[in-house]
Length: 148
Image (cartoon, rainbow, N blue to C red; front, side):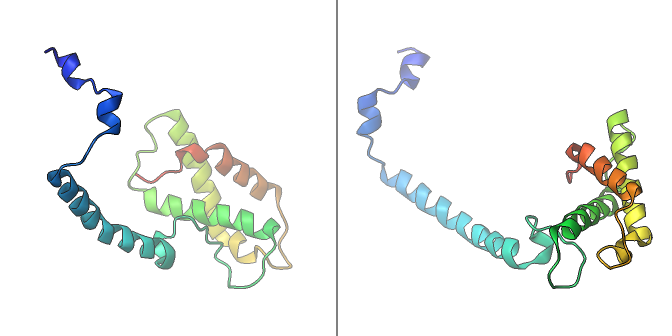
């Protein structure tokens, strides 16, 4: 019998497959061992702020906020956290794409942390052209925003 003939399964064998006792034991313990990990991560994703990757923090106090304020604030905040976490981890000089992305992210972070973020969302702020340019820079280089 050739190797190809050995690896070929007929439809009859596939639909009439009966798991052995050994198969059942492997399935049970495989599922049982992965269950505690799944439960732990289920709780972490929902209740531990550090693991709530599906939420974007605006940095604002709780309360109502219009999307025209919360969306740019969330982008600036996420970009700032990204720069602070990856500054010493990623080699941003590896090529021109990384270098341009780093300049865009770092200038957006400096702008946001330099006082604009404190005024943002209050009556005295305005959407400056610089803020719009920096937001466009973040969006244009978003493919470089991933954690190693």
